[in-house]
Amino acid sequence: MKLSCLNCFSSDSRTADRTRQEAQNPENFRVFSYNELRSATNGFHSAAKIGEGGFGSVYKGRIRDGSLVAVKVLSIEVESMRGEREFMAEIAALSDIRHENLVTLRGCCVDGASRYLVYEYMENNSLAHSLLGKQQNRLRFSWETRRKISLGVARALAYLHEEVQPHIVHRDIKASNILLDRDFTPKVSDFGLSKLFTDNVSHVSTRVAGTLGYLAPEYAISGHLTRKSDVYGFGVLLLEIVSGRAVMDFDREYREHYLVQKAWEAYNANELVQLVDSALENNFPEEEAVRFLTVGLLCVQETAKVRPRMSEAYRMLTNETNVNDFEISQPGLVSDFMNIRTGQKQTTEASGSSYAVSMFSTANLGR
Image (cartoon, rainbow, N blue to C red; front, top):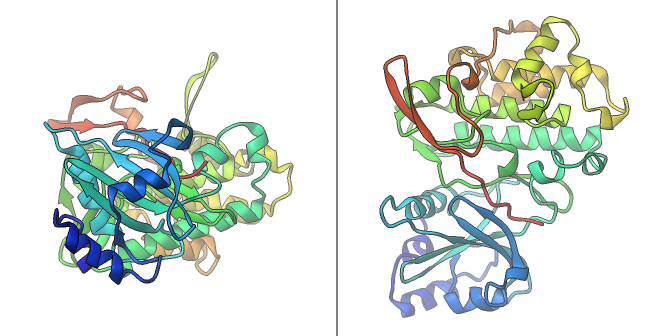
């Protein structure tokens, strides 16, 4: 971990000043003072607020070098120290790595019991807000843009899972954690739940945390987290990007709709192309769109070991690997064995295992 990251926890203002002087490149991780962030956000004014999540609020600001940033103000829950854990996990994951498709952590601030994280600002908000919102929003997403986003997220996860040492499992891949810059380049964000994996570790046992619909079933049951848990979340995300539909939907006639189940039914009926977003008005390459949906189904298979690694999924998306060489088995659905509603938090017993599923509303870093 960088010196500047370590100094982030020092209460010695002279040490923080030295760290700030060392950060000549504005892209370097650095320590901000509270006064800098207060000034950048106009006193954390409500007009600058651009998001709110389970761990605090996010504000748009302009720092001294003139660049726009998103400042996450973490709420520290004394009893559970959740905010402190997110703060540490985010810094551990992002302070030393750079990738085109990962959000850039510009720095942090420690002011007494308060914790702040500073990111690059994303002009086009999150994928959940921009694509999965109203019909008119989806019109901005051509097939080329959707391809760009899908490939970018796949590259980022392959980098985290297979190139970074130690490897990083994100643990909360979902549409609201994929941010979009002014060119719609995707940036994977929010590493507050992430876990580090060394080469000799196949899984870690942990409290189950994530978002209903994106949770890999074996992880929800056992608490055994692997890289294939992220692969499952990516598969769901891929189905959302191509279809323009949220992973869970609701209407009066059919009640809950689970996108994974819909895709599986369409696949068995040889009608996957019918799942492609109608907002595209047939302006898309049918063969490629069906391939993307097929890769999505391969990633959400119930049996984790038959899901592809992220680098393999990327090669399937780019057609370097023939997706038709792989047999698809039925997907796993957390909804099959848990009666959990979005926005709730509860502990459920299943197959003799106890697990807690926490639903987090992640703040967006753009507007």
